[in-house]
Amino acid sequence: MVIMEQCKISFKYRLYPSPAQGTTMKNTLEECRWLYNHFLEERNTLWKQHQHISLYDQEKTLPILKQERPSLNIAYSQVFQDVVIITPR
Image 1 (tube, rainbow, N blue to C red):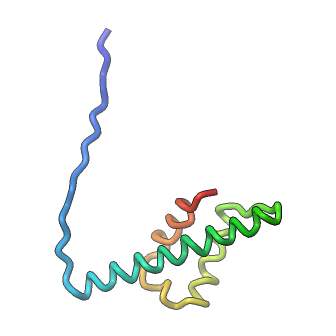
Image 2: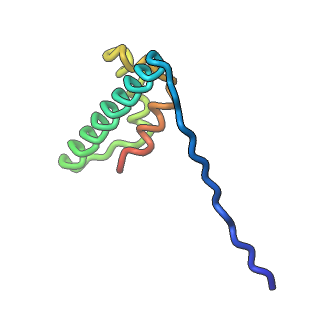
């Protein structure tokens, strides 16, 4: 009997962004941080009220948040959908 082991390979890349790219990456990260904290606060508030909000309900609020906070338009929607997914439930 042969036992096959999987070997996970990872790569490390060093980025050398231009000043404009660095600013864009910094702003995107800041918006992701704000969105993460916003959704976490929303979940905690509802949990204290013995209510629940689903992942999809929070994803549905993204277009509304983009209208209220235009700085969220700097990145693709998938980036912010991923933030909703990684927010602890």
